[in-house]
Image 1: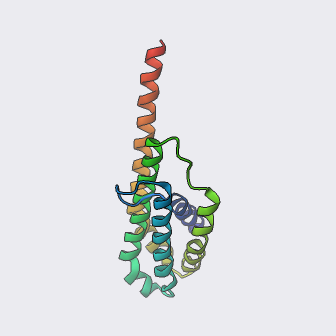
Image 2 (image 1 turned 180 degrees about the vertical axis):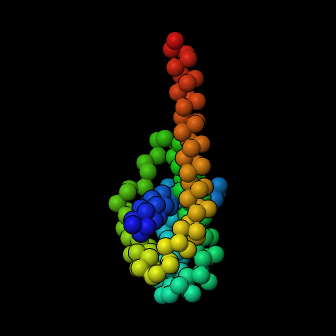
Image 3 (image 1 turned 90 degrees about the vertical axis):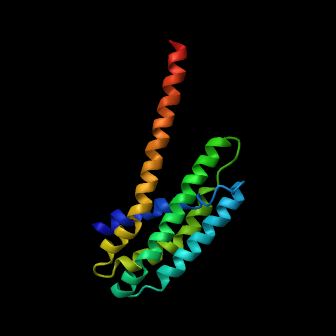
Length: 152
């Protein structure tokens, strides 16, 4: 079912979400705070959607919110890679923050035709995350290759 495909992607976004702001973020607490701000904004926007027409008018702002969240996630991941000594944000905290957004999204997905619009709204953000993930895997592979060459 299409709802099952969308909610896990968005949940992933929310979990990772507390992860992207701007390059000026210098500690985990700032990432968490910015993530909460983005989620609160997204939750508010989603709570205002009660029909397909409203969703159509809010699609652009939802795309922006999803993009902000994915960018925060990418920056957070990069930050943690550069600072391995730093403890990541506890996952339980992220689950609690994202729960309200997930409920709103599930409610909206019950509207006929909404799933397709939500998919379109999150497409750019999702693509950005997948590209960042692929880039990260390539970096890991290159690092591993350099390491193993030294062993041979």
